[in-house]
Image (cartoon, rainbow, N blue to C red; front, side, top):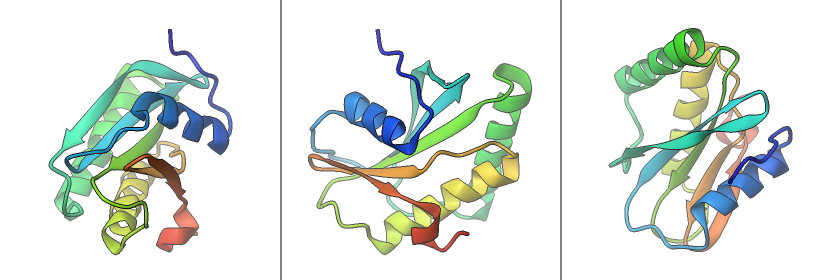
Length: 135
């Protein structure tokens, strides 16, 4: 059973490595892991068809979902996001835009957000807030 303790960025990155494996990705997705009491809940949420970054309405919608999860389902939740896509592991402008949007949604919801990660062919790498222009 997969029940890691997630208290550091390295532990979150290791969890993503375990969950995503060394595979290639044939499409663009965003994965959401909810963490309560330093442990991930037993299911991941995949948001598919995520080639282009979300517009403001989609960011607001995600923020509302996160707020409701915190209020009604799992009080005290933290969120971890991972963007998966085909291709090389170089962080692109689109990856940065996705990360900015995901950090923004969590901030609007008042939900703590772990470092966003990027998964590409055989590689998982962090996309920290400062890399995308958030301080």
